[in-house]
Image 1 (cartoon, rainbow, N blue to C red):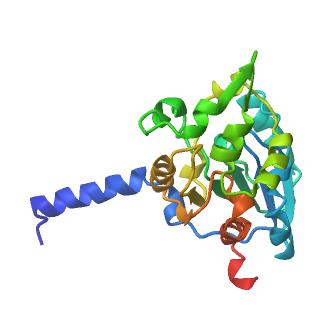
Image 2: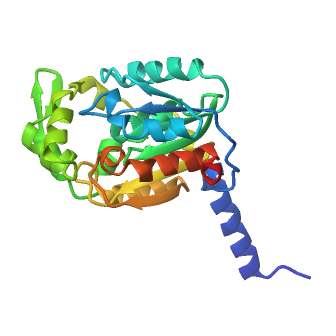
Length: 258
């Protein structure tokens, strides 16, 4: 049977879509043994303390990286050192800015899946700041202050715009351990996009005032990630740890057997 022009056009279109979609759409998630967690700006490794025990209970070996927040290459190197120490398939999880790290280092051979928690997910070489400017500016941006090259959130912005659904007393503790970031960190660009070759998962924070939720949805859709929407502030891993842990367990291929 001869191929009609319409059928030929549709076939070409379908082929093009398959070429630009990340392979994660069709990939089967392998069973993982380990989880590596990476924090973003305005936080430290302790921000995962509500998620970690849930993952450990499922039999996973968990490590929370202390992100130096100095430059993207140094942050990536810190995560890579932790990945190198893992024994077997590993789920790499990033919150907020550390989605840049996950995207850059996620091609590591031990990484079996990627999880983005309200996180940046740029393409290779993409200017994330320019991408973010195509969406309304989130409220927390106005609360960033600098002492020389070191940036941090004011307490008011931290409590209202970063951790708005966390009890105030607890949010103030989180504010007390906030780590400053270096301006140089924000200038970094990824050289690769691991989400184009690894199974990817994304948790959108619907009440996020630090990254625009619609930007999160765009990035999740673009990468073909399995996506969940969590009614939470930017720090869903603290205010909604069960939902975040469940997504990580999905990425580890073991949620059904918990």
